[in-house]
Structures are given as C-alpha cells and as structure tokens.
Amino acid sequence: MLKIYNTLAREKQDFHPIHPEKIGIYVCGMTVYDYCHLGHARVMVVFDMVAKWLRASGYEVNYVRNVTDIDDKIIRRAIENGESISDLTSRFIAAMHEDAERLGVGAPDHEPRATQYVAQMIAMIATLVEKKLAYAPGNGDVYYSVRDFAGYGKLSGKSLEDLRAGERVEVDPFKRDPLDFVLWKAAKAGEPSWDSPWGPGRPGWHIECSAMSEELLGEHFDIHGGGQDLQFPHHENEIAQSEGAHGHTFVNYWMHNGFVRVDDEKMSKSLGNFFTVREVLEKFDAEVVRFFILRAHYRSPLNYSDAHLQDAKSSLTRLYTALDGIDAENIAIDWEEPHAKRFREAMEDDFNTPEAISVLFDLANEVNKSHSADDAGLLKELGHMLGLLQRAPRTFLQGGNDIDSSRIEALIRQRMDARKSRNFAESDRIRDELLQSGIVLEDGPQGTTWRRA
Image 1 (cartoon, rainbow, N blue to C red):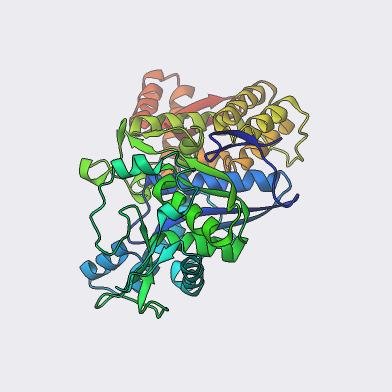
Image 2 (cartoon, rainbow, N blue to C red):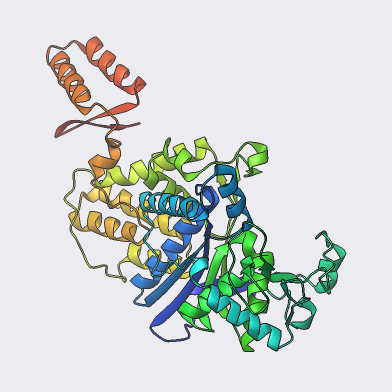
C-alpha cells in the first residue's frame, strides 16, 4: 500500500483516497512575474512524478496546478516594464510552459488562473463574513479573524501565542488582531479591480487557492502539495478559509517538497546565487536536471552546484550507455520480477525516488552482463515511471544538435586509418583531441562510437 508523509499528521500514513479509483490533487503553482527558478522546477518535477506514479498505479487522477496572475509583485513589475499586466503574465506563462515541457513535465489536467475565479473568491469571502470568521472594517478591505478559527496552526505546528510573540507584521489600524490576514484588498488608483459587496478591489493571495481548489476538486479532496515555504502562512491560511467556510476537513494529505540550496546556501537574489531554469538549461541537458531533482527524496533539501549536476550527468550517462546498442523490447511490467518489485516498494514508500533510481542502476548492471532486450525493456519502462530514459541512447550520449558530428565522424575514420597503419601515436593524438573538446570515444566489437564526456 502507498504511504505518504502527511505534513498535517507529521508521519507517514497509509493512503486511502476519498473515492476508490479517483484522486484529486491540487498544487500551488507559480506567480508569473518572472522566469521560473530552480525552486519552481523542483515543484513541477516532483508533483509530475507523483501524478505519473498514481496513474501508473491505476488511479484516475485529476491534477490541478494553479497560476497566480494578479499580485502586488505582478503589478509592480508591469509598471516597471511599462507593459500591461495581461501582456506580462501571458509572456511568463508561455515561458513557464516551455520550461516545463523541456523538463519532461506533463501539463496538469487544469491550470486555473486567479483572475478567472474572482467570483468564486468573493462568494467564499461572503460566507466567511456571514459566519463571523471574517470582517469588513469599512475601508474596503476584508480580513480573516484568525483567533476565531479554533484549528489555526495545526498544519505548521505554530501556536497563536508563539505567532504573537514573534509578530513582525506592520501594524494595520483596521485589523482587530495583528495576526489577521487580508482576504480582499480595496482598489488602488491604476490597479485592476473587481466589484464586490465591500467595494471595488481584488482578492488576497491566500483566498485564491481555497476558491479554485473547491471549484475544480470540491470542498474535500485527497492531496494538496507545494513547496515547504508555503506551509506557513499560505497553506495554514487555506485551511482556515476552507474549513472555516464549510465546517469540515479540507484536505486529507498535505505534501511539501524541500528547499533548493545552492552550494549549501539558501538560494536568493541578494546572495547572487539565484538561478532560473533557463540559465541552468543553457549548461545542462534538461533530462540531467530532472534526474538530479529526482535522485534526492522530495522532502530532503536539494543542493544545487555545477559539480552535482556534472555527477548527475555522469550517472544518467551510465544508464543510457547500458541501453545503447540494444533493441529494447516494449514490455508489460511484471511487478513480481525482483527489480520491478523493489522499484514499486520504493515508490510506495512515500515516493522514494532515490531508492527507485538505485534499482535502475542495479538493472543497468544486469543489462551490461546479459545484453538482454527484455532486461533493457524493463529498464526503459521503469525509467518511464520517472520520466527518464525515453530518448534514443545515442541521442542522449551524443548530446543533441550543438556538436559537429560530421567532424567527429571524420576524425574517427582518420583514427581508424592510423590504427590500421599502426600509427598509434596519431591514433592517441586524435583520441586526446576529441577528449579535450568533450567527446569520449568507445571502442567495441561493432567499431568505435562516441558520446559527450
């Protein structure tokens, strides 16, 4: 049985879906005012892996990943750029889709944009006001009354007393309590706004996900995911809003992936170690980046460095090298086969992709010994479960289209001629020349092949 670490329970729990064959998943997506960074890449890849495995396990999955397309940062960036908000957000949504596709991330079943669901947000806020869990002080804003929701803090483990002791939020004279958070913001000059019972304005960030998840998955669904940084206050506030509005459980299992660090330091623009997905993909193959993300457990910190990416590249090269030259059969996986069984056990243990990947390496060793098309087919099929090993091995090993393959092939022929004439010094010189340009030659029974170092 699948076990999932539930942040709410602080333990691994057996997974029991609300409906036996159907699963609803909501993942907090991007605020689209800039290009996606490595943290976004991890969220996309991790929950793509989760959805893939659940589907492979026979479930019908309804996967929702939202887009925040109205926000203070978006408004500020549009003003800085001298462009409309819709032009800005459309541009970065398109860029996000390009990054996701390159990383092998499938499209979610639904990708709601906040601006499309303002009516639902207004309706939920009105319900909270009616239940006296929210209040409108008369300035056009609406606030959630944190102390009136008995369960506040249960996801993050924070008590109201601890939160109050560490309170650093700027004092707002319209709030009844500094811990209260905004549900609706009164319109400001020059900003987008919608009509509401409290006057023109726009929704706060937290209410977006409560309203959109309810509209697309219902008041109660199986899994809610996102980065660890969203656990508090965003997800805590979602629980307060949704459970406050409906009076029952909002989500059964909360999943949070760990932070991305760069050379053992927190990634941040102020430290100058902030990388977009695009910057990383200029240096490394997209499948290498996906492999790098998945070989760490999703809940663990992920430490990015060029050295770690180079190591990931070498490791993925070993798997593709095992498949090279073998006409791998398309097979149906026998889950009682020892490698497949271990792979499944790893994935059922809270999506333990590091252990699952170790099974791929054990199977690759078997392929190297047996040269069996069936073993190679199983390696490809298990790799497919993680979104890996689906390219022609030569395509990966030779590194794409930015290499002059005709020059390499010409040098290989020159080297073969040198060896035939026993000019081993020239043969070694050619090998070394190619190696210095990042090309490794491999001599085998069928002749000489090449790959990127």
